[in-house]
Length: 244
Ligand SMILES: Nc1ncnc2c1ncn2[C@@H]1O[C@H](COP(=O)(O)OP(=O)(O)OP(=O)(O)O)[C@@H](O)[C@H]1O
Figure 1 (cartoon, rainbow, N blue to C red):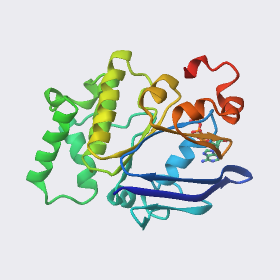
Figure 2 (cartoon, rainbow, N blue to C red):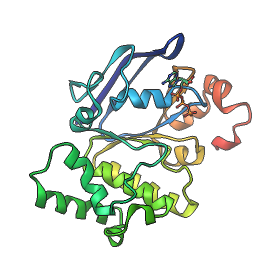
Figure 3 (tube, rainbow, N blue to C red):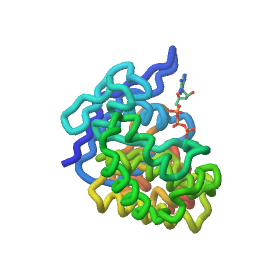
């Protein structure tokens, strides 16, 4: 069973204490939303989880393996993957070639046929198989988001962190991405969803974490978190109509 354990995570950038002892665990295929005002530390936490930066102190274990001192490719191999706020595809490669990159970069060169089969499976899962030979630069913004999800799925991670997956996405495609997120969870993956879009967070999440100036001020069921006085004061404001 998937188990992520974040313990007493601190991050300082010079005198700026950005994460102040963050603790939480993920057990199994949970769908967890992360909220927090600008500068709360969400991206910093994500960058630590995926190995892009090191914490000042504290530990992160994934399935009993310590990952907070690993390089990003090692973290990916250990089973944690993330998407980025700004999508990163290789614009002059085809969709299919884009899907191969993460696996090749991880040294899975020998698995030619298995790789093709996996890419087919991922394209079908995302219903973008008709785009397989298109150049990434020809895709719409929303299709690029799906391609990025696809690249992540190629590595078959246990834990998926989605950083603003709805930014710049047409409302119709949002529903499509909702459906994929739910399907990924049904396929046994734990999903951490970071978004400023309250409607999306509340529509999808079964559990919410709220960061405020580097403190985790809430961790619970969305309805409870929404009504938590500290959260209302820190983040949602007195008028919580956006969160309804
Ligand atoms: N590399 C860095 N060097 C110095 N300070 C940094 C660095 N990265 C982030 N910070 C600071 O850490 C704090 C938290 O930033 P972070 O990007 O993690 O917040 P966030 O919650 O993701 O915000 P947003 O919602 O705007 O993306 C901010 O004060 C930011 O200026």
